[in-house]
Each structure stands twice: as C-alpha cells, then as structure tokens.
Length: 296
Image 1 (cartoon, one colour):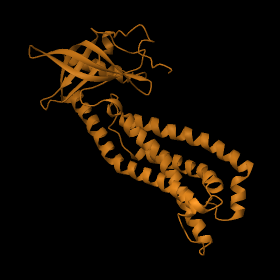
Image 2 (cartoon, helix red, strand yellow; image 1 turned 45 degrees about the vertical axis):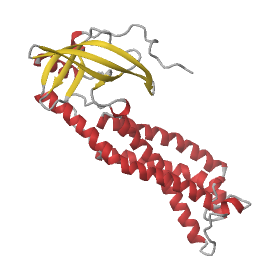
Image 3 (cartoon, one colour; image 1 turned 60 degrees about the vertical axis):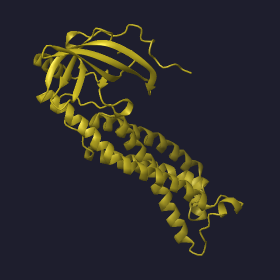
Image 4 (spheres, helix red, strand yellow; image 1 turned 90 degrees about the vertical axis):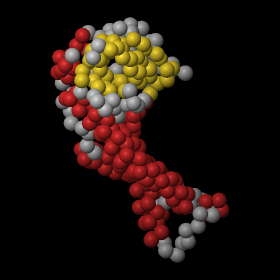
C-alpha cells in the first residue's frame, strides 16, 4: 500500500504535477487546500514584496480618481495635474500593471498556501489597502493645506461641487474593507497551514490504502469555472471495507470517472487525505462540455 503513495509523490515532484482534481473530506470551495509533494508549508513572508508593490500601484492609480473626481486634490494646481489627459493616460496604464501585479499576488499565494480563499484575501488586501492609503494621504494633505476649512459631512449633500468629504467616505469604505481582511487573514493563513501540515504528516506517517472512486455527484455549482462534486471512495483497512465522502474541485476536462483508483491516507486521529492515483492511469469524463459552466 505504501508503494502506491510513494509512486504518487514521485509523480507529483515532476515538473508537470497536476493539482486537479482536488479532494477534501473536511472543506469545500475556496477552503480546499493542497500541498504539492516536495513543497514546504506556506509562508506569508515571500508574498510581502508582491503585496506591497501591488498596493503601491493601486495607490498611484487611485490618486487620479480620488484627487480629480472626488474632490480630494489639496490645491487647484494638483487638481489640474491629476485631471490632465496625460496623467489620466498614465493612470490607466498603471491600472493594467496593478491588475497584473495583483494577479501575481494571487497566484503566488495559491502556490504558497494551496488555497484560493487565502489567495483572494491577499489580492483584495492589495486593492483595498492601496486605495485606502492614497485616500488617507490626500485627505490629510487637503486638510493641512487649508486648516480654516471645516470638515463637514453635510457638505456631501449641500455643496454645489464634489467636496473632499465624499472622497473621505469612499476612502473610509476601502479602509474598513482592508481592516476586515486584516482581521480575517491571520486565521485563514493559520488554517491553511494546519491543513498543509496534516497533508505533509499523512504523506510521511499516515497509513496508505488503495481505494476506488465509487460515486461522482455533480453539485451544479462552480468555483470560478471549476465544477464542484461530492464523491465517495471505497477502500479497505485491516480487511474491513470503508467508504469516505469528500468534496472534489476540478476542471471540466479532468473529471475522473467511477472506478478510478485513489490513494487514501489516514491516521489514528481520524484525519483523511485522498488523491487520484495518476500512476495507475486515471480516466476522465470524455465529454469535456458536460460540466463546463454555461455562458448564461
């Protein structure tokens, strides 16, 4: 039984290791976690340069709408500069760079923690944090440049022009969003690391069994464009047959068919991890459009 697991791990260390389908007996959707064979448990430190760079790019991009459109330019000259067509054009280019960099944050977070939920939190923090930061800087600059002007939220409704108070409210919304993410992120990171630690421990110390996929039930739901399933796997432990249910996320062209061989790793704590036995030659649903998300 151990040979099958070792074969799976050796296969996983190859350059083209397939992460899908992904199985979990405890989680579903974005909390489903993977640890590539041979990879370390994820760390946040390698993501920090990418996160800060993305946040800075969003701050630079956001300076134009906050300053020129939401009334937060501290002086008329700066307002004209931020509203100049050249400045707007540069901001549009920076927007595309910021989107690409944020995508890099997301993909690297997935690589580190093997989980789309944590990756989404990192990417969202870059956006919300950057926009909140530039709004705060512009608001402080505006208030200090004209101390005699009162800060009055009623001006949002009474001012004939767009007052800086409106930009302050929008910026505060992004700041609140970023604060919520900062509260959620540590717990989400800790959970993803625990799941990766379980997978790592089971691969080294767990009992390995060869199982068979006995049921594949489509839930009629997708995570992004990945179809979600509930599956059942039959395996034998100490001569006694057992059945375990799990959530499965995969792509439309990698839906394993009933009868596919599985590797089931368990321990005395009741922790279970399963992977498709790719070494045995897995078979997939031939109709790749069957589980593809509809355009509507």
